Every structure is written in C-alpha cells, then in structure tokens.
Length: 134
Image (tube, rainbow, N blue to C red; front, side, top):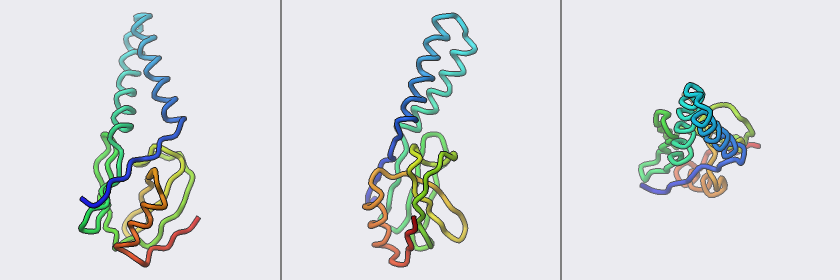
C-alpha cells in the first residue's frame, strides 16, 4: 500500500448520527420498539461509514475507495482525466459535502479526502495529465 487518506467528516454528518442514536434510546425508553429498531439500524450504518471510509492510493497506481457497507471501488489513476472540486450532498463515498469528483472515461466518483491537496499531489505522481478544475 502506498498511502491512506481518511475522509473529511462534516458536522452535519455527526449531528445526523447523534440524532439517530438519541432516537434509538428514546424508542427503547418509550417502548416504541419499531422506532428504536429502525433508528438503530440507521445508526449502525452511519457509524460503519464513519469508521470505515478511506481512500488508499496503492503502489500499483490505483485508488481503493472504501466506505462502510458500500461495495469497494477501484479507480486506475492513469485513466483519470479530470478532478473537479465540488460541493454536493448526493450519496457517494464521502462523509462531507466538500468533495472532489474523479472523472474517468468509464465513470465518475465523488470522494472527500481530509487533505485534498496532498491527495491530488499524490495522484499526479502516477498521472501528470490530470486536470483540476474548481
């Protein structure tokens, strides 16, 4: 493995997790078992994503993208044409709205590395032709 980058985490994501944890406790306290179980399942999913979202740049020129229970993705760095700095809350492999969109001929994937500048710098070590746009 070459280098691991953790995901940036928005305060709104943390607040959402706390909301569902509190609602789980409230559901058990008031004996609203359906509410408690639903909120517990959502809390586990959010916590899993919080603990297991990272982006690994491997020594063979790939980005391994992991995020909780989502399936892992691999992106060949040599295939990257452009990186766009975006602000989006769409569902993706990111825990923050402050994201980068990695564009290849086959797909686009949005991620939110904690240190975007170092991440992009490391990508450019494998592919000097990556364009960065804001």
